[in-house]
Length: 337
Image (cartoon, rainbow, N blue to C red; front, side, top):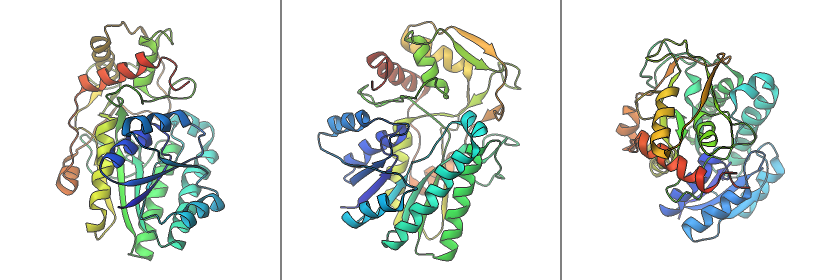
């Protein structure tokens, strides 16, 4: 049985991926510093899969923390989710993002190599495409970033490519996510942001459940069908499945693999509001606010390469995304607290 270290495994995407990894027969260890995640999420994952999960509190920037894990466990592969992810915060605190996301990955890879573990699936992002010249976006589009968060992902991709060039025993898969939404169908785990949400879906859900007075829509003058920004929203369980498929196939690849995980469809902010109102039966009041710096008009994937190399595709539609988000939010109005 392959033993997998899941860094950031208590977070939103990490916890949902943990469920599917265990169901697929992988032996996992969760490693998290809990700076923007909760131990409660792991307890709930344990309920879903009906087994205990080895969980270690630690920081990817701390060599001693990592050596402790690798000395105690024979790790075969790492899925690396651990990272800060708020675009606005990254603009205000770029050094924090470079230290955590870039330096943290460099330290992790050094420790992995020292222990003879050279397989890594990295949680990258569609933000590495910057402001794309057209849509849908395929993996060969030019890379750039409009904010430090996106740049930190771009830098890590480059580090991992350089690492492979220096030592081709490394197996590296870079998964570029579009916009994860939704929750596990049980409604027991989901997205639980600290403070005011940075992402659209938890903001809509918290407004619908009465936790927020209204949704702020940043910009209604983009060149899109209704003036609001268009994104490729992907159900978190489909995204989690992409990681399992990547791990299943990682040994077969002879080069660094870069793969988009998206649906190939773009929905605007107002499209999402309407779909959520329908799914929840609740009104979502909103106000138009100025555009945010670093935001772009349109971003959605060409996901055909993922189907070709991983046999993966996003199957859940916008209705399922909204229904599952609402089930999570209405069962857990205050998240994991």
